[in-house]
Amino acid sequence: MKDDLLKLLDLSREEIREILDTADQMKYNQKHGIPHDYLRGKTLAMIFEKNSTRTRVSFETGMYQLGGHAVFLSGKESQVGRGEPVQDTARVLERYCDGIMIRTYEQQEVEELAKYASIPVINGLTDFCHPCQVLADLMTVRERMARLEGLKLCFIGDGNNMANSLIVGGLKCRMDVSVACPEGYDPDPQVLEFAQSWDQARFELVRDPMEAADHADVVVTDVWASMGQEEQAQKRRMAFEGVYQVNERLMAVANPGAMVQHCLPAHRGEEITAQVFEAHADEIFQEAENRLHAQKAVMYLLMGR
Ligand code: CP
Ligand code: NVA
View 1 (tube, rainbow, N blue to C red):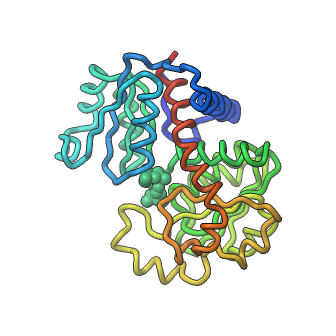
View 2: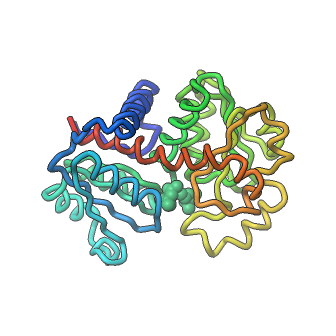
């Protein structure tokens, strides 16, 4: 059976730990010039149906550093955007490539691609989740705080793809997770069901950001309107503005030395103030860097053995 990275719900705590440990090793090797061209001669197809800076560059660079090659396919310019069935795309790409990374809207499309392709499929973001980003976040928290278990992570804002993956990844790593979002913008029901049945760490969903951030060790936020929700931006602004923001008042109730994480791009003055963003820029850009190392780990574990 081939393996894929479709969503963190599919992974055990041990599998997440294996990815994080491998990511640390990848980072060490890269920083110390230790050769790690484990994917020499291999090719990753990257399908993007949404925009990207970090995901595209980190996957492409990561593949290069592993000795392989990446091919970029934009939804608009490839036949994917003209409606070629995912079953056919899967059966074509598997004949040229050794893995597929896809960023798209529907989680179902990624699951279908994985079902029909005989090569590993990696989810580079869907409306439902963003597993690669959260693996990088967990790696960053562990680097800076030396552990995950027992820490409190809070997420302030929209119950979106980032919230869904943080809830699952955080809880699986035995972090307590507290989410504050406005009514009508809750995380996915499948994720809430998982969280409510999980007994190895605490989970709460509240409306008051101050309550969620109380004694938090890690404060995370994301944009109010995600890619594909541009038309709802005004309505969303009204639901979030003035309340669902990571600012100094909110950071004051978090634990001293609390970290801030943001997957980026950030909208200063909306979900996070410029002041808090700049005060925590070091850890936020470390998080962005760790996309590279975490994804190299994922590609090595899925495609290199
Ligand atoms: N955080 C993230 O996935 O960034 P991009 O949209 O630039 O890939
Ligand atoms: N929630 C954001 C994350 C971007 C990396 C989006 O889906 O647009």
